[in-house]
Image (cartoon, rainbow, N blue to C red; front, side, top):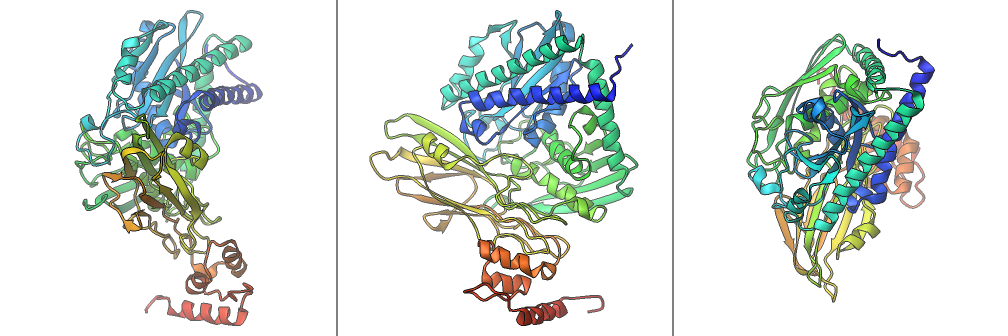
Length: 580
């Protein structure tokens, strides 16, 4: 007979489950070696019931990892009969097709035993900045991209498999950091396991499954109720994502079908997979499709197995959003991050108040740097940079947001301590946010110098740029204007953002992330908001007049009401209307 839970007890237990996974999450910040994990928070912790159904994920998880884990971890758990797991087992795997889409995302998974039997599983995926291989998005196959780890036992009944760790050590550039981060993953799972067992003991429960069924069932009911509010119908969208450098553009074709409380996204007609590293596995594409539906229509409910059940996706195998092995996938976010935006575009007519427009942080601007210090010691680091968030019907876009990936910026002090490089400046880019009734968020400029002194790196510094928006800026919607494009400069000259860029001592690199698109007619933005934007340095006096029709005194920033009314009237007359 399944155990039933009254609403108050259920809420208390749910909050305790969230606190458990967040405590495991916090342990990572205290124990991880890599700044990509400690500071940028590019990892996700979660746990499942005994059947592999996702129950809880960390509050600050990364959506691409979390959504892919909900599918992949269940598959991994069910590939081994429950009775074959042993207490103290720890598995490690980074198969992109099983999990989160590229080799850098390494999963460590552990069964949780209670009274001699497995009652749950805990898992975490870390984005390791170093997994070996050729660090570039222009690889042609996954074999070039680093160490491929199929599901292996890192610990067998509590006994460490040193052979697995040695295999990893000898295939990466910075083994101390990589192995340290793997040990941090094991520690996070241990924290989660210990706290789950404490909860079972405190509550007198023998299993999590009954509690999981209650939580998952309620979540599914809430998600279906939210979807049922969208008008039934088919909502198509066709978009283009730029190819890096001189590569061909990639076409994405999708159709969102809403039928009652079910929603299906179909990618039939999308471009086939390509011979460079932006191919996306099914799990990762699904993660950002789910992100769009969940965040737009039912953002407050927990994310678990129940939330994903009403959201289905189909995509042709061999397409760029459902690639076949051994496709190159290292830079999969250059395509995968766009899925949220494109689902928003498809649903913009059905639910215009529920979506945001294009973001400059889509895709996340990822930079990988590596080389040797002046004493010959190898170093390797990765940073992710945000752009301007797209505006919504109610709010301006935030500045420098990493959306939809939900990462954080690495502090300058940490970057400079991890590398021999110097950050010359980091600042918002004025006029980069798309004009609109609600303005897009601003992009950011970051300037990095390779020093030319006694501490200069030995030999070249390799820089890999995995980014986008260099040719096609984030677009506005419902009359909103586009944000500024991204740029990558080497010594003041535009550089190729594809492949590897080799730099020498004295070189200066400038990275500009794109601004977010605007929402609605800029001429309908409140004059006082435009004045405030100019005062804050977000918008220039010139753009205030040109885009918003607001005339300000350049010295006092006082509004010239007469000229503003006149210019706005003229601009409104110039706009095409019915029959023109």
